[in-house]
Image 1 (cartoon, rainbow, N blue to C red):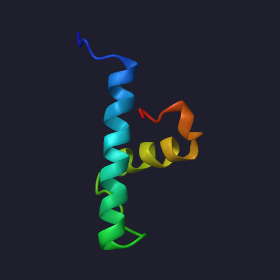
Image 2: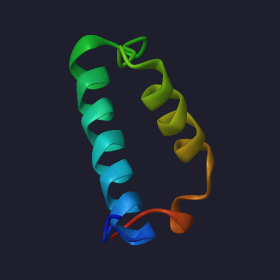
Image 3: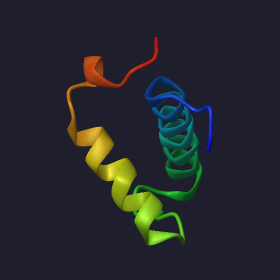
Image 4: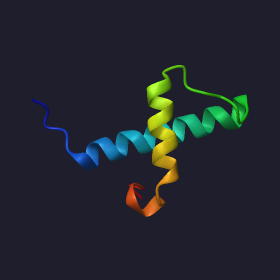
Length: 56
């Protein structure tokens, strides 16, 4: 079993979303992460109100 918490997962997803945003800024708005499932989770995460997941 892992000792990861929901907050750990939220921070990791926020980091991935940030990386994708940076890639899209440099590669174009249509850039997609090759792992479709990860990209889909990030899309869903971005559709949430930022205060629900933003670690800042």
